[in-house]
Amino acid sequence: MSFLGREIQRGISRGIGRGIGQALGNAVEQAVAPAANQVARQTVAPAANQAAQSINQTVQELDLAAARAQQVQDPPAAGRETSAPAAPPGSSLGSLFANLQGAVQSAANEAAKNWKLCPACGEPAGADKTFCPSCGALLPEQTAAERARCPACGLQNDVGTKFCAGCGAKLPEPGPAESSRCPACGESADADAKFCPNCGERLNTAVPRCCASCGEMLPARVRFCPSCGTQAG
Image (cartoon, rainbow, N blue to C red; front, side, top):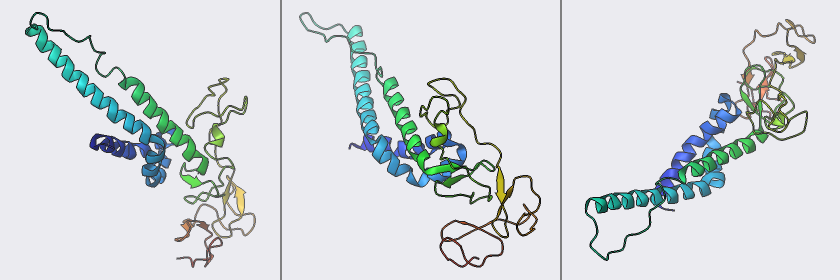
């Protein structure tokens, strides 16, 4: 790959996390940033190479246009042939960057298969999580990608879409959490409950803790993580 191509791909690598974040929700941007370079290499690298080629071609077209402008000021000698008019410089760049935008959206759709969005705090969580690692709220069963599937006609829409591109139906949005998790015993409780129905602990008062090893939400009084066994701090 040429130097210009590498620079373009590096810029795309930096920007793809932001593009995915805008598609999934701003909270996801930071979470997917570590995978941005890999996604860019696998999904967007061909478009980056095409970008480098098109920009090089545009530079050549601009040079040719400048040379022709000089010829207008200094007409060629008799019998000297001139080349046919060139296409407008940059005429292909619009479709090129449309392809780049499509590649970023495709990457966002792929990333959305592995993430859920917390309906209470909006933070991202892995698809295998049941409770939000940030606030302890019960997570939806569907991933962000599954929530983009139209319940009316079944069309799989791009993540971040509010209305189905096939039938126009409004797509479901994350609503208020239907239940929360007791910080003491881990029991589920109604979102508006003030006390845990299992142990009587007052809800929403304890500071949530996460396992330093696996990130699992920890009840307030446990000494070891129930998922990986690491001692709680």
